[in-house]
Image (cartoon, rainbow, N blue to C red; front, side):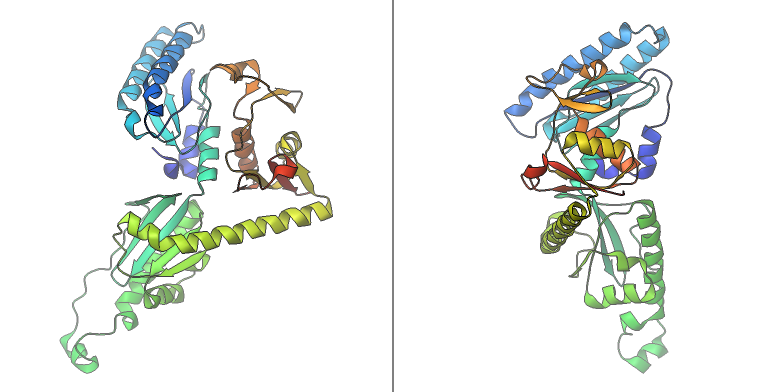
Length: 373
């Protein structure tokens, strides 16, 4: 699964307490040759490390050890490293397993606990800036889920939608012409009201930036009959894209996405400047970490691809110099993915998290926050 599938409900289920040991494996992967040649060897070594730790864990029963090893082997057999992204996350319990591919690198790690390690998934989804695309016409509404340049149709959440078949009244056709006006017809209005209702439920469950795509009449009527479409960050007046394909839809969306990204960057910049003037501002990893853990951060702004290994001691972060720790360094107090942990914690405490271009926060040590007080 990709991060686009990480909904609030899915995350809640992943974080649920499970019989010990619930195994989480994370490792960086590579999209292209020749770098991806090392991924298969790396995965075998990581699985061997997981089996070794399970086998020597006194808290794991013999039945659990055998069952989890079986699940890990099944998961490994399902992984196709030819189509890797930048990170791989694998979860396993006695009864099942899951595989997630991430669009960013993650540390190499094996963790045994009573729940799954989710910080890398949460941070990857936040960095990927997932969004919705609704293509709307008088006879079909299609939902697409996007993340970066990855876009997929959604055959769920009430979509795609089509109106019920209607038998036009011949007498009515004679009165208004050869064909009734589609966008004045009550059946079309009823259909678009159902689209608005489904869209409202979707955004309430998983609120992402929404792009509307359709002919001007279709978009105008959708907004007239309901309110959910008012949340759209941009409208693309283009018809004939209800069924994609995804590359064509992405091409039409590109200018709107660029404009929205520029607006967001300006909004974030203004908030940081205002926060500094009002002295409700934090900068640097340790200072932002402290404010996030205390629940004082309202907005956390992080440079894209910012990562740093640290040692956590007495609530403060100390950078770790030299080589990255070995897999399992988490248990020794090393946090290779402290930025991911910070992002997940910030989101859990209700903060807004936004990512900005590399080197745009150099003077603040790559990370800053607007505080609530």
